[in-house]
Image (cartoon, rainbow, N blue to C red; front, side):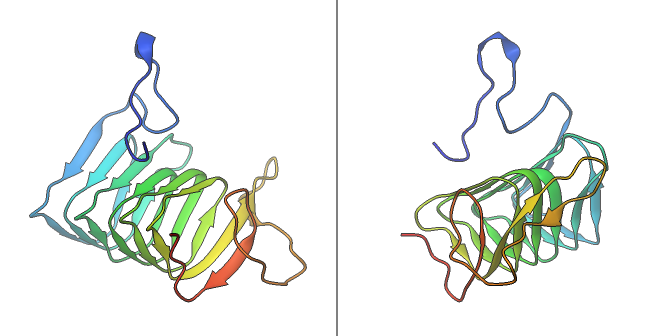
Length: 161
């Protein structure tokens, strides 16, 4: 099921999460300002600022159904089941669960979108070049329909049913 990745037997971690520490922003918490983190970050409350994973870290962000971010999210692995007003940058794996609402552009390497998730902005696939930062995939500058395998597109509603 989306958003419910569990450690496998033998203590190994799944695609999401890592063995680092976990920071939880509870439901009634409001953070004003940027968050720079490593490890796991779980958002149940409101963040009015950017969420940025420390460089060279295997970081994971989860925005739960009641969670909300008003700013950018930049992390390798991200699961969204809440509301985002800002751009999302995932260099590894992005999961948009059924209650995800993104009002901004989404830059991803690998994306999973559940039925009911919404993206109101551009979906843009990025590729990793050795020794360089992420760059947009070339499509000749022509917008194309977004797919789970990659591509780029623009959507005014962007709802997956």
